[in-house]
Image (cartoon, rainbow over all chains, first blue to last red; front, side, top):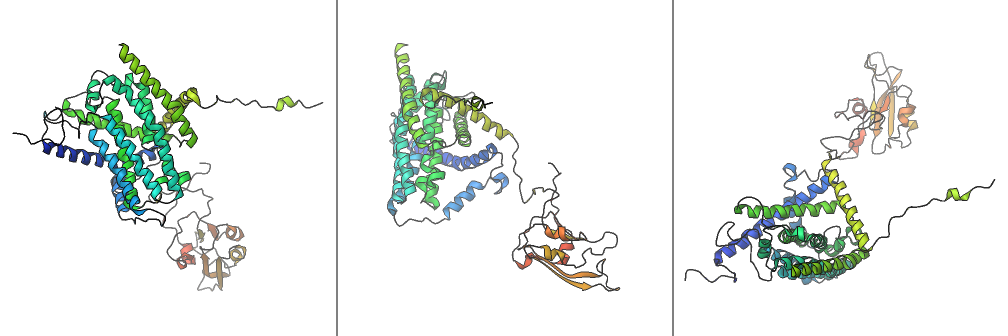
Length: 338
Length: 177
């Protein structure tokens, strides 16, 4: 017996210690992206609005995220009289757990990119993208419980909206990815990336890509679909009553969700780790694609106003869902015929 | 002759009805146009004036903190202590106590001078009436606008403070800029 039993069953031998090491490295790297995205978002929004953005804390405002986190950590976590305290405590935990859990399946490189005995991803589950959907659907419990347990009307309205929004857009999101799954013939994310060796699926599945992008914005509650936390009408929606690091967790979960959606988009449509240069550069290409998508998130935030609630619903059900269904149908026919 | 009412009718050109797949297609086009516009903004120089380092320029006619003036050739004060400014002040923030000039203590060009000249800037409304009332152009409105201080008594400006040149020069804007 040269090997100990692996923690998870994979189709190649992988040492237990390397699985733990991978998990730590992936989470460390991605969690470092979060403050970076925070800063880049504020800087870019500033530029889009003809101002500088934060530039007071440290050189070029580089220490701004650190100052933000320190501020959040030192703040009081108030609980309203009408709230359910233990639910308010676990809601941000659910949010951040479901957000980080999906990170495990996003592949940053193939087996052989950096070593022949391990792949640059947390785990290659055979159900692949379904795993991401499962946690995406669970993530809404964080918002829902958080808003409901706060015992405030604004929070409650925000969580109701997030529930309605999730139901309307989750279906379109799933159907938009189904075309890719049909084309690749696999649910596993690594196999989907392998299938894009010749050309990226964004070419053959362009409609699917558009639907996924729109539904992804709704899934992450980013503008123009940030109705659950619409500042103008709901104060801050589901997180109104949360203070300190509890709010910080919701905030962080939103940004991790952004990274996850960008990662899935890069994996499913933009060729994942594929790019010119030696195989050792694979994770870099993946990170670059994710970064590009994140910038697009910010760009859209600076451009589009928030949709009205009825516009959101009718867009989800009357436009995205039929379009996504048609896309799957056409893809299926083309794949069967050819 | 009767007025042709038909000339008053304005026909409004409306866009196509929103909604549906066609609406979604048009929305996509408009979204791309918006994205382009926003991206153009990112390439332009920010309009921010980084205040403590860089001050907003004001027009020469800006009514900021008052200044008292001296004659440039003799160095005598222009103010003769007539109290017309105090009489004109709607906020009642100017206090003038006049005293007689003597040959060995000549302060102003006239018979009397202002022994005490105080402006309470917590009360001043910067209307500029004092400037108009003054028969000798002894008091004018300057362009300094940084008038924050820690206590109210610090904002009572004495004659010496009003006569002194401001430490920070406020940048001026050209007329018509």
